[in-house]
Length: 146
Image: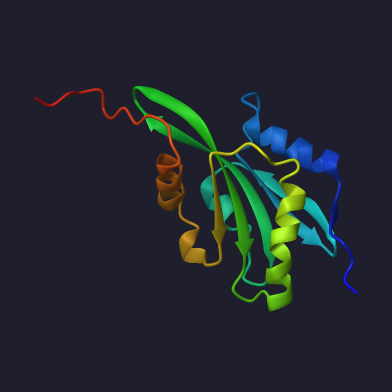
């Protein structure tokens, strides 16, 4: 019988708040599985490094801050990512919905949520498009064409 998934809530909360803070440079955190426990596996800066944290044979969650807006209005938006690699088995895939509900007890503030299963979907343009569609004003260039 499989054991229930657990997590160290304080460690997860600390990583979550680090990404949300304007006082640190941390832009993302990755949460992976160590047996039946969700752990904070990495934190960092830069989308390229974020992309490299996910392998084909694992399940993971990512929380990332992305700078949005234009020259008139800059703002941080947050995205919650569920990663299920293409080599992950059926039982582990099925378990992701309950595991996601556990981590979302802490990671609760984000503009959009994505489930990603292919490396090709791990794309900054795609992420920004999803965040733009999630809401908020898009002011343009500040130059009005007549």
